[in-house]
Length: 372
Image 1 (cartoon, rainbow, N blue to C red):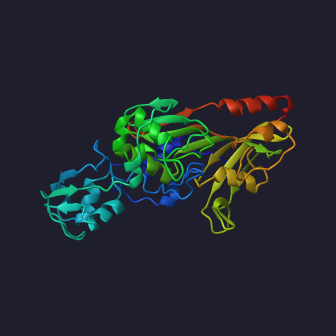
Image 2: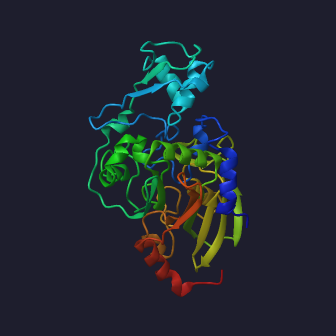
Image 3: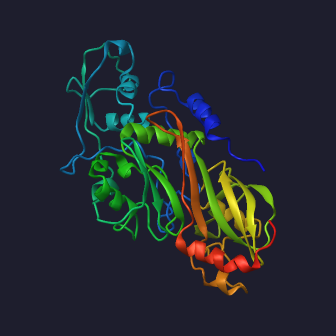
């Protein structure tokens, strides 16, 4: 079966796509390429924008955007002001800096100016970032989190099924973001509390969270370059093939806009899978992703007539097996996560076992296990 490159190969790929010494300080990223599978919007928040992660302003302790003051270095002499801004403020995207420049939030020598104006070194630059409403609304809440790893650059969370990742319509409290702000109050200064990708509310498993603007920007670029390794365990209905690849575009279902579907004009999406265990009426698959689209695994498995067990949107309404019928969330777990550490530049990988409910379901099926 075609699989992801190993993390050592990913490290080389990442350096090829983005090297701090040779790449532009903040190349713009197509939001379409950082819509990670199963991790884009939560079910209740299907229109949430993840494209600006890593570019919104940090918030100070008083709830206001932190004011930034810097001096144009001599090495930038002769550049347009917008080009100099991109070099001086690499923690923010070029598009966001240009928007702030147009709205008067960026000043050169205490004056508003045009993007095309040249700088000569020594000028003072002030930036008054504009915080997103969701960032201003976020509040810390004492909610338990399972932290798999933490250092000064990032932390890895094993998210429980039932937890919404980011506040949104109908879910402004009790989210992973609220829990993160309680666990690490300094994340208040990082957009979206450092969240760079998501899992659906009822999907469990591993998520990486950036603890600094620099780490967040780096991780978003890795997601855009598709060098982040993500492997899922999915229990699907039926006797699935031993291995295979679903290469089919995913987009909004034209008949029901709150759902996704395989559609001709959707975004390219590719999922690799292989069978780990077989049961009388279900197959446990390991799924890996070349792309990341909203509900990608769930949609792709439905498209090959093997929907996820328990999936309330794309699954079967009725099945003969009582154990499968009784499972009321999608049987999907983000089991393995690998990336290039933004601090050390080295490949790192973490894993998490399936949660208790999914483990119990597998145990109940073990009596009818077949050869994989």
